[in-house]
Image (cartoon, rainbow, N blue to C red; front, side):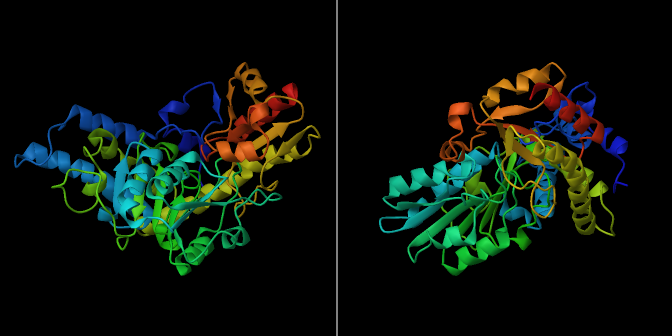
Length: 400
């Protein structure tokens, strides 16, 4: 028995009315109906300039601010702590620019060799520009995870910023962000957490993590092509906006936000909370993500079981579908075959998977996988079905 009805779930996603089985969800999910409705309503209605006294402008502002409030609710935060933008890469770049004055020679910045480049490259560039030192937190060679021991090896009294991923989009293993952020804070440094690969599968509730900044992409959580950056209000920041724009989030939103897409964000939270149970939205969101974790674990288990039986391939990350260990983003490599060879063979069966380094270039490089075109990745979410997983397994069995 599943905590919610799969047919009912899928009916909320117009993009799922296709003959394709979509397993490229870590790259982007299809948006839910509520998001599409709200974007359409904004484009069809009060799409006027903000900031005026006339009623239509006031309603337009309200529609956009409801989107910001929805993201704050999802993250257990306040609306003025939430910055919106076109992508996580862009938002992290803005954050780095606003922290620049606090960094100089003698300071150290810690980045990993595991993560998506969005939370690596901007910090490396910042350190170079400010004359600071970059220290690399390397993943464990056996588990392919970031560990507390690995963090200890690169922390020092000069560490000012530590950037890491809650879940690697290549490996799928969940890191204990709370424990890692607590150690970083004890060292007197800021923790910048990439939650892009975590947020589709577990609630990105920043109250649980103790981080200083947390980012994720709404288009990977059934929403529009936007991203959200939460910043602890205690963090001192500069501005990347006009000199006369004061206060957050405006100082980090040059040119403002994409009104119609942000206006669609409440539909995403309404959908997620509808999957849960409880007397208020807070309880329903927590319940919904527990249900999502249970469903996704049951979907990933047969896929991981099948892959474990194949002597010619290796799964990266945990072999178990245990929801406490991993999300259902499953990457693997096949002996003596380029990763790029497999997905086109499944295209013929209308089963959508991907190959590549997925912007975790340094991890793929350090694992020696670039020469074979990276990994094959199948990324599931709760709207996938057991029947689709069967199609994926059957397709892989035919081509391996």
